[in-house]
Image (cartoon, rainbow, N blue to C red):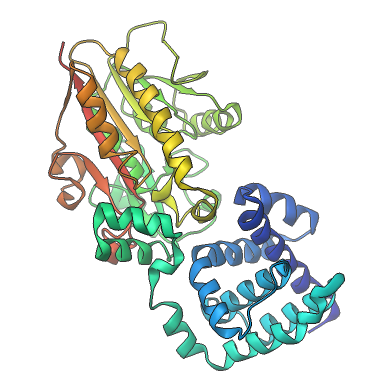
Length: 439
């Protein structure tokens, strides 16, 4: 290996360790830390991709990697050995979970520790011993790593899901979240799914979503022409619950980054898309421009916004803990806490009450969240129905969601668990309920 490639490998691994620490110790959003640190390290496209994949994988398996590290260390690490801990975790991820050459993972991680200032350079020998053992005992250690999927969940989340779904389902969800998600694509209505499945090397899912492996979407056929957009199958289902919206004024609340806005517009609705985040709305507007779809885009607080003209229907994709999307956003696993769920549930209730007041008699609203927490989903809806006399639940029929009856609850709500359709790559976690104003 040349000095230049060694330096590149060291820079990439050092960047990965810094990003991991930024997320897990400082609660920084993954995307922001990735952009800042990889730019500062002057990494090329290939090394940036390596760093992103390594950190995402380490975050998905953070709990089980930490548990395994604890078993491999007789005395543990001092509390302030943050670089050493992050180095061991990323090293274990490379050796056990990535197709990285063992010698590169070991040697460059050890070299990195040796170059640290202060006391942590003294742990280079320890890091070397742990990673070399991992390389020797890969099979046994990987079996142990995968034996308890709930290790990759914070205790509060495992307890929450056990209470809501039962212990076995909690484990199924935890295991599903360990894997890398597929790439799901929503076609514009009228496009031929068979034709585009062939062009995109994709599989047609029951609701018409196209599914394929992850790649650079900008390089795929049809992207520049705005024929389709990226949207997990679960996130694509709530819009279908509004039925025929051709020519109707639909209010899309908390709309950014715009997947559902594009769905609504492509189905002929007159869409008003509202979000309080200007930067996220820029992305929504860019998506509309690329796809040639129209919507009125407004920066406003969904809890207080009132449209100038009456609405026929409302889609409320409420702010939530996003615990259903942890395999796409594994940093959320370690940056959210129970108190965040409580705050968000209170915010959801305020927005839900206000949004429903904007509906005319007979109007329909779909309330949805990409969360698996009952307090943000079914409990939120039950509480709303108990205090709003003019509201009734309109049960979802399986035919509205591609015949996927396993996604419809006994109460008639939509509940997508990441463990569902696991043999096809799984789905994001999502909840949706359809509410109608009776008078």
